[in-house]
Image (tube, rainbow, N blue to C red; front, side, top):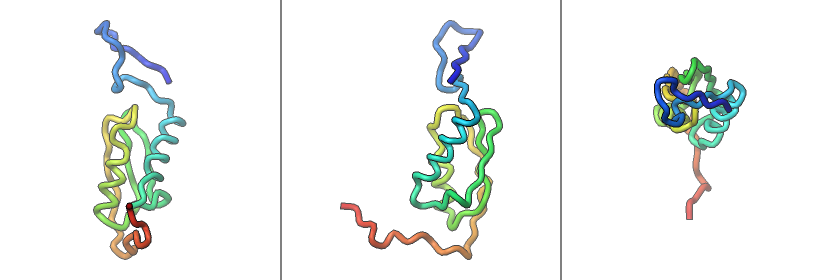
Length: 102
């Protein structure tokens, strides 16, 4: 991971200035989506444009759409998320039956 300090400042580089290699960013975004039980990560596509991640594909609900975007906030190298996910209402909502939190 390369850190590129701001040439106008003697301050240390911030998270906004950390340059993440494309392959590492891909892995981080994919892992963040997979960790979300509310969404089907296989139905979501994404691409990167600098520090912006663009989500695409289909999800089963508005909650899943929101959850997918929120999963990416805070990832190093991501400063903007464009959520272009579409809600496919014909898909069944995920069932959490049997998943009881103690």
